[in-house]
Image 1: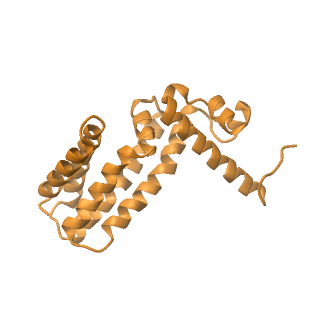
Image 2 (image 1 turned 90 degrees about the vertical axis):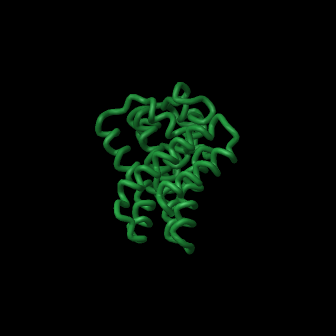
Image 3 (image 1 turned 30 degrees about the vertical axis):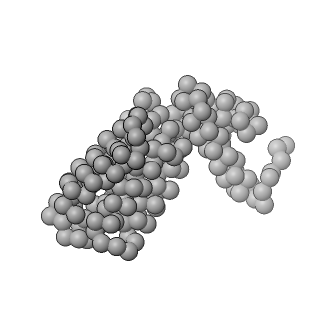
Amino acid sequence: MPRISAATVADHRAGRHAALLAAALEILVAEGTAGLTPAAVGARVGLARSSVYRYFSSTADILAQLVEDAVPRWRARLEGVTSGPGGLRERVREFGVVTLSFVASPDYAVLRAVVSAELPPGCRVRLDELHATMIAPLRDVLAEAGHEHPDLVAHLGWSILGEGRRLAAGADPEVVRETTLDVLCRAMAV
């Protein structure tokens, strides 16, 4: 019988799940999607591949759960800066700063992986839903300020930041960051 390493079975499973997600992220960052397999994730935490299937049904499921794990963290950061003190320009700029900082995060490996992964249609729909939650804080701050088209402008702003994220990987990050933030604020007329 396996040993339970927590006060309850539910706590044990939650701890194992968190350890498996952390291991999966480490593998993804170090080796890319080619190295991300249930067997590799299990080996990283000392579990047999068959035990990993109690938590994930496939490599695509591992990726999907990594996204489900990362998005709330980033959304909370985005909500924090857009609901904080300061005027509209400062809050939009801080939204941009947090969004651009994503490139330097290990979670960025998850984004790169899901873009190129073959995922089931239902998973793609869920990714679109999660994507919308990331844009929502920007839309909300624009709506609160009385912007005429907050949803459209927030999506356009997200596109500007997406290009900034893409360019930051291969250029002087400070120049890309400041230029992107300037373009973002100008495009939003803030």
